[in-house]
Length: 280
Image (cartoon, rainbow, N blue to C red):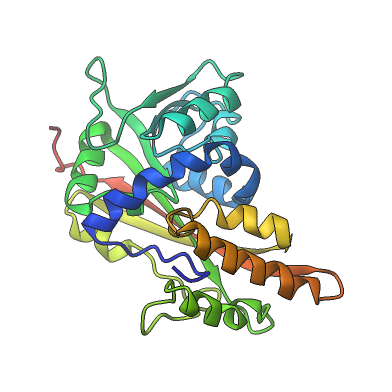
């Protein structure tokens, strides 16, 4: 839906789009950008974790966010609902015996033995989880004083950002995939955070919010590979993708360097499990 890849979905759309990523399993690790190293530094500091800490990852995909934490010595159980993505993650994380990839969903998975974790985390995956279920489930799987870490990734538009994304929107409109009315082109620092939602759940407090932004340069084929990992673009009809991708190639071919600049912002939220949250 538009080039912003909206993160707001209803329950029906959530379930329909959630499974689309598995068709992009082989492409995901290559096409998606790395998260900033500073994000992991802040996560480790805020959650008070380190080598030997135990973590449960919600929706690991191909292990993009798992690998940096595995390299820091965490013992991680990764949950992934897509069989193809889980297989890719096992290959990418094969060198870390303390990492286990489980083909299951966060809402349905039950550990084979009673256990709790130091950290539950989700990297650009929590929006697939029903908040009415997710926060309670996370609290049940955390030790008292353990932490929940969620980070969301947004396309943001600095003052000197690339105009390409506004210019391409009429093509999305033409193919019936335009942005919803009122969609904002947010500047860095304006992306929403989940602080109020996390506190309102009643299971967490001491919420830390940190933002990290950076820019990535793409040629036409690199950008199209990225779009092919976004649920809304995967779900498009073939004719829609052909029209859109053809126009992206045509417009970038007119630029002297054939490239575009996309600005990203990750919003990290780290919250402590309340002592009175209780175990399920």
